[in-house]
Length: 443
Image 1: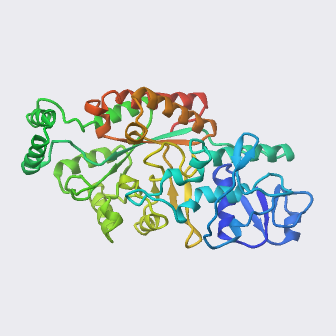
Image 2: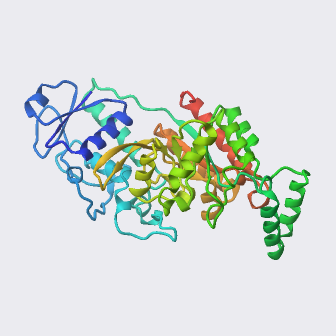
Image 3: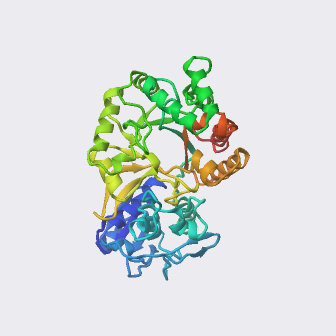
């Protein structure tokens, strides 16, 4: 048990301490405002006030956690041995306020501030403190917490913390279930005419061969995905886009019997989540309709979500998910760069900065996406695998959860995606090897 003396009860303080100790170190926290009661408490004691007390760990608060406003805060980064840190404090057992810094990163404080967005209104990775200071590819919060735990254990030899082991969670986004099959004659004819007008003869030939049952549909990679993950003992989560076709949403009609059959089949053995459409970010009630569509198909409540195009506007996107009883979201990551958007490799609760309260929504941050590696970073399959393995080692080293984001269509192993199946296969093999190396149990 960690005993914490605070000046005043504040949602941000409790959130940050619980994230650090209960989520990352599996150690319960008790808060005290009364100094006499705190003095009589047993166990590891942290004084998180402006006053100094003997017989405990003193940490002067930076001040961020006692506020209930959103100010223009831009941290000044310095080094704590080999780790970048910020929010320096004096006369404390750590050189920085780890709780305020953790809160700043995981609550995504900087994403509430004015700054450049891309053409879709998304927060740009280059504007983040992690990118500017070179730690986007490090799960910094996990590393801080492990190092702090060692400091506490050295000061209090009777204390002991349990660290989480490495885990891997593969996820699949299904934007377009098939390239040609099950789309009806009208849609196929119109698409064929566009290919002909654009001179895409190879697409025409492939479409004809698929529709004549001479070759499988290139996007029909579901058996392969299941096989690769089953061999290594992993169970991916599938996210389905169920909006009508549009400029940014190319999904099939949700009542299409073949699509419904596919979703039902996958949901029998795997978790299935909603992939909220691009349009749902601009049309009130659209997300509710899409969630209900998926629930109608799978016959149970939908708990998981990931935004199409990784459309994430804080806090609005997450508020809508909460209103629709979504329990976990997997959008936290950048489209243009791999790494740790919230500087953490562990699922955590969403804190609504504008309302200044913690919510029941769990955020699952992903680390790598196929499109990021190929299109944004312009990596070859070999270079992409090297990057994945590097990030996976970083995650394993701090006992984090490595979440990958792939698409059914990018695993077709043909056309521009030729050679990328081996990346996916080697990634799952690497994850399985890390489980063995770190003596953890697959879930």
